[in-house]
Amino acid sequence: MKQKASALLSAKNLTVHYPLRGKGVLRAVEGVSLDLYPGEVLGLVGESGCGKTSLGRALIRLQEPRSGSLAVLGTDFLALKGNPLRMFRKNIQMVFQDPYASLNPRMTVFEALSEPLRAHFSLTQKEITRKVAKALEQVGLTEKASNKYPHEFSGGQRQRIAIARALVLEPKILIADEPVSSLDVSVQAQVLNLLKSIQKDTGLSMLFISHNLSVVKYICDRISVMYLGKIVETATREELFQKPQHPYTQALISAVPIPDPKIERERKRISLVGELPSAENPPKGCAFHTRCPWVVPQCKDERPSLQPIGSGNREVACFEAGKHA
Amino acid sequence: MSALLKIENYKAYFYTRRGIVKAVNGISYEVHPGQTVAVVGESGSGKSVSQLSYLGLLPSPPLRILGGQVVFDGSDLLKMREDELRKIRGDKISMIFQEPMTSLNPYLKIGSQLIEPLVIHRKQRKKAAWSAATQALERVGISRPAQAMEAYPHEFSGGMRQRVMIAMALTTEPKLLIADEPTTALDVTVQAQILELLKSIQKETKMAMILITHDLGVVAGSADEVVVMYAGRVFERGSVDDIFYRSQHPYTQALLRSTPRIDQLEKELPVIQGNPPDLSQDLVGCPFTTGVLTRKRFAN
Image 1 (cartoon, each protein chain N blue to C red):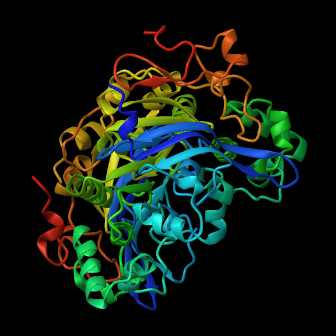
Image 2 (tube, one colour):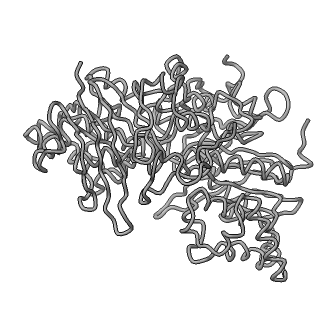
Image 3 (tube, rainbow over the protein chains, first blue to last red):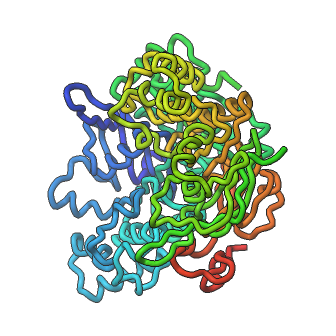
């Protein structure tokens, strides 16, 4: 059942290019389309250089897309500018990877959380205090945190503060870019559980960007896999991990180590040959063909587009998908 | 077979302005030839400091070695002078680190850096060393090694640089390789390749490896023995199967339970409350129960 009409966020053919010194262009995101539905957590997964961070930043216009369209809550997001753009931004907020870099060290927690409120609304001091307290409570911190500075907190706590800051405007969409990658395993679990429960309580939609497949599996409903600036496969969590259809997805899943010695001793890994091609000079045809175990002549000349496969909203970009067991 | 490396009651503290940080607080374990011992822990556990410190790689002061023994191949490293340690470091004991870009000199060609251990430790002449180093590059899976020798670090990807680091560490055929988070900064597909490479080299050369990591998946795939560290102490040690299937320590068990697994569908990740302790504070009793018992209470 296609739900295209009710997508909260709908990106079509987005491209993000970074100019390189001298000549040439880094094609970070090449013609990507994705939809984010109400109440879902969509995972965006891939290795370094795949474009997932650039795509996340483009969706919030921290990085302007070079081309394509972006509809958010029914509005043409790319057409907005000036004050209407600033006001609209309260609907879509972001949490970043590094909790040490994303919080201003010279602002108290209260100042950091009230700043977005002052930027978007005219509220009384009492209302601001109330909203800040509510955001802190949502992330499991008390009002005692308000007067402290970021350096007084641990990494996990700082990430909670960053999440509170993103939530204080009560956005409909949250983009989390590697939110737990810098955290210790035990703290990671805390923050993941927090994100999960916030998402359940508020019903907000989340785009969860990560290179860690185990984490993505734990928290996401649907997952899109990226390689060299393009989405190669999109499926529900169950579908993707039970039966991945794209050869890169299969290799990626097979490379993830499992904390279980017996399983590790017995598993057969799919080894990818060679290195990731450069994003300045991507291969012609399918970007993955230089390392693909299924490559056929067509792959070298034509670029496969995302095509539906199986039932539901599953898509995969591969000429050979479905032909290999 | 007697141990290649025997660490016994080793203590090393940092004397800082804020107080004494008991980074390594009495650890003991052994490493045998051909074995991979994983030292696993979160940040602040002391897993890296415990290895860097006895090799003389940390500034002293503020580091002070307080006691214990670190016996390698029959000699106590802690009793050695700097010039004696320098003969062993890079020769019989080699190290590779997490960030290959910061371990390689960006101003020198790969070749110039690779031949250094051979020239210094084996007194080889440049030409002979260059050819041996080129072969080492080939062994670690770098295609076109002759060209690679003439290149600079920035021309390589992270995975390739790590291969270069491994080649450099192996040129002297060390008995022990200490790998400090060697694959943490790498993509998972590259990580799998690098770990495979290390395994195959060990099979050939019977080199022992101490693998420092926080990633339990990597431990399960690479380790024979596991040492679990927390707040500068060893909480548990044993064979990899013992640790994963029959762990006796609540911290190990909690760590295992809070690690998401790709082969399982978990409804809720059990969590360890609180944070790892501040090692500059004097900790009485078991550091896992510091302050209130909160750290020890985990869901279920």
